[in-house]
Each structure stands twice: as C-alpha cells, then as structure tokens.
Image (tube, rainbow, N blue to C red; front, side):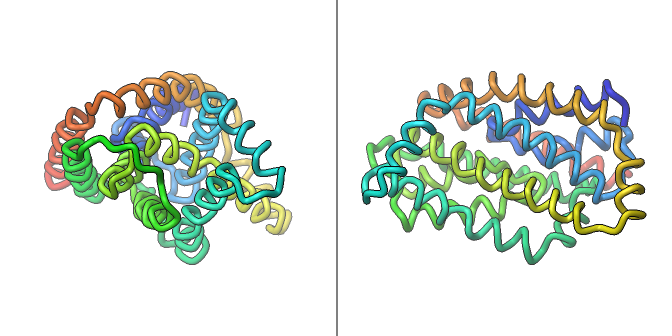
Length: 272
C-alpha cells in the first residue's frame, strides 16, 4: 500500500469512525477500490492503526470531560464519575471477549468481503432509521444499558456495522438522551482500542526473531504514519460534526446513505 492510498484510507477512517456509516466497512470498500492486496492480518493491522488515530482524536475532543472523570474517579468515592467509569468498563466486556476468543475468525473478515460489508451496511441503515424516530429524553445511561450497548459494540466489530451508529442507536432506542448517548458511545471505545493496541504489541514481543523480522519487513512505516495522521485530523472534524448531528436528529440521512452503499456493494459483489 503506497502513501497516497494510506492517506485516502486515513481520511475515510477519520470521517467514518464517528459518522454512523461504518468505518471498517468503508475501509474494506476503499481497499477493494484501490486494489489493496494485503492479506487479512496485514489489513487488520492497518485498520487497528487507523482506529488508534481516531481514538486519540476522541481524547482531544473530550479532553475536559476525560480529565473531570479521572479527577472524580481518583477521589475513590461512589460518585457520578466513578459510576461512569464502571459503566464504560462494563460496556467493554462483550467486545473484549469477542476479540480474545474469536480473533482469528475476525481477521478473516477484513480481507475484502464486499458482500458481507453490503449486508451489514443495510443492517446499520435499519438501526439508524429507527433511532432517528425515537423521542428525545433526558435519561442517563444505566448499568444495564451500558452492557447492552457493549453487546452492540461487539457486534459492530463486523465490517459494515457502524460502531457509533450501532451504539448510539441502541442507547437511544433504550430511551437515553441523544447527546449523552453520543458522548458515551465515543468515550466507551477509547480504552478498548488502547487495549487492542497493547495486546498487539505483546503478541509481537512474544514472536520469535524470524517472525518479527518478517512482520517488520512487510510493514510500510511511512504509509502507516501518513494514514495515521490523516485519520487523526479527519477524526477531529468528524467527531465534532457528529455530536451536532445527533442533537439535531439527522440520523435518517445516514440511514439512506448506508442503504444505498450497501445495495451497491451487494450488486458489485455478485457481478464480480
């Protein structure tokens, strides 16, 4: 993968990570269009690097919230901040279990399966449509809600299911306030991504020297860096925009977009 392709895919990732259109699905479509021939493991690695970039952009956007949560948590009292952190941890459990026990199966899904992406984009469209019709409330995310939203996040590992779309839609359909649902959705993924990065680093450390040499020889550090920077900058823009869109109940537009792209992807997969 060359630098220009990495930048294009980085921008796609940065925009679609926060917009409810499936970043992983668009990355797979983008790789197919650009003719990327990476094997599933390398393709998955590139996807993780770009997700890491957007996790950093989330931290920048919510830096004040995160600092307040950390300060409140460090008082070691059962306050709102401690409860929020507990809910975040609870929401991570389903995706963490799926990532640990089905890692190899998941890697095989990131190899350009356009039919799968198309079908899952249509699922995303259905979720967004119903969430957009939900009434606005002032309800906070409960512990039970956090776990259910976590299940949605685990399902959203599939390319084509929008993580933000699935988690925000699930939260809203559970009766939670839309703005609070968006905030919880964006913050809940940050520790999960950093956990995935840490696991990947430990896996690399655990390989023998021959495997390490082969892995690093296959990596294009410059291309990965270019993609990382592009995803980070695009993510800053998209995260801010998405919060505004959720407040204004504009999710139906994305439902239409996902449905159209999903149908096109399915048609193209059959034609090929």
